[in-house]
Image (cartoon, rainbow, N blue to C red; front, top):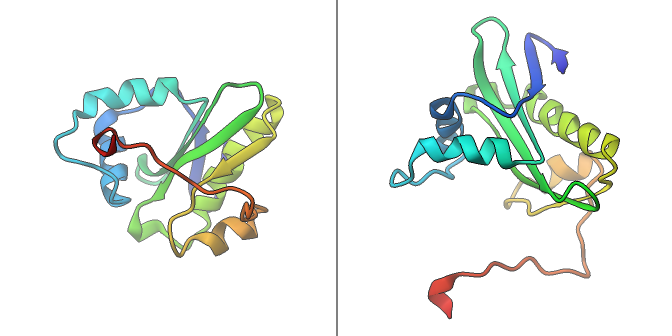
Length: 143
């Protein structure tokens, strides 16, 4: 658990799925055809899932997650903070909690795919561009 400036970051394996769906919406990552109930499995199935909570309201204002086999590699899959809370260090708190947990569990190779414009945030936390790798995505419609 990390606390600072009225925000508490907790690693969880259960959380209100509607709240998490709202965070995905804030990140522009939600498709309204999806069922929020499926987020329970997403949270529980993540290697690490962190929620940032505004202590004054009890509201989740950010979240992040890492997927991993728990042995070698980890991937920061999602990191989002509600727009009204951005610029206060909450994203850094969430990511730091996730990285601390991963390294404590022996997962030290951690990567991510940064959205355009977010590179400075990640480089300030020690991430470096992998010049020797190209991010790729498989789409069944492209077969």
